[in-house]
Amino acid sequence: MKEYSLLSAEERKAEYARTRAEYEAVRAKGLDLDMSRGKPGKEQLDLVSGIFQRMLTPEEYLSDGEDVRNYGELAGLPAARRLFADLLDCKPEQVFVGGNASLQLMYDTITKAYSHGLLHSPRPWHQEGMLRWLCPVPGYDRHFRITADYGFEMIQIPMTPDGPDMDAVEEAVRDPSVKGIWCVPKYSNPDGIIYSEETIRRLAFLSPAAPDFTIMWDNAYCIHEFEGDYVPFPDMLSLCAEYGNPDMVIEFASTSKITLPGAGVSCFACSEANMAYLKRLLSIQAISFDKVNQQRHVLYLKDKAHTLELMQKHAAILAPKFHCVLEMLDREIAPLGIAQWQKPKGGYFISVNAMPGTARRTLKLCQDAGVTMTPAGATFPYGLDPHNSNIRVAPTYPSLEELSQAAEIFCLCLRLSALEKLGV
Image (cartoon, rainbow, N blue to C red; front, side, top):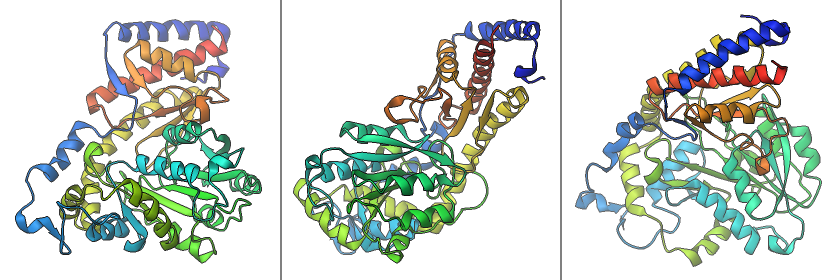
């Protein structure tokens, strides 16, 4: 196989004809394959469905003397707070346990900042005028939709192999209208990058002009290795405190990809001062969250060691799926020089950078051939990828057989769009 940029016009024309014929043959099959979101597949859901296959016994209604069926414990069962603290390597008193979705907690945090301000806000954010937010790109589309919903100007921060470009971050936070940054620090969405220790320390050491600048530390994949051993990760809360910024970070996590996405448990973790402030606001909107579900998770997951054993079972399901896509890309695309991609060892995505100007066309070809994927541009604020290049691949949901078909079609579409861009 020869790099497409080195082909003569006649060679490109012949290659396009062959590839187009392959594509049309696949399209005629009328397939319906889904790689649109990072959802666990059925095999993973079946793996953990035992969490709901029995009711709690009368003895299990009690947790630290608290009846889990009743009101109370706004910040969550002490046992659930201890469990998340174990997973995140922070203190139980720094943890607030909520409902099933960490995204809801993130949205609620921005909402409270907008309506009331945060702990160190001189005024509620809706009184501030211009609001700006730092968005490492490519990044998580739902993060961007939260800050877009509140009218923030979203500033793109390029991702590097070590995490966000910290020179750009340090320059940007000199502006007092910059109120925060989105971070997925371990197996970032979609690149699968683990922030380096230097990057984490520079983030913790920031001196923003805004007194209420907030690092939204979405540690969604904190224990989500699918290849190799568990990778320990620094506690951002402790680091921020060490550098004199104890209230600058709010960390988020959930069991969505540990147990069941629609019926899991989420949390945020923060300084004790932030906790007191946020609990006061939360006490107005809620009396307590679902403590019965919290108790189920405590009894099922037990502790970090036991949870990591469960994650190895998830990994045994996920690893072959990631290898399927990566091996297909290595075989079918790498020799052609038309795309580059990350090779993550954890998380839920593969980030592919196609030839600039071809991402939308590639995904339109995929859609026409029966493969649904995340829309082009979704990994950038406002859905606008300036290079029309980045594509987020989500291998987790289809069966291995379906995924193999979808990956083959994706590679065909990458080839077709590249040839069209080069001219045929």
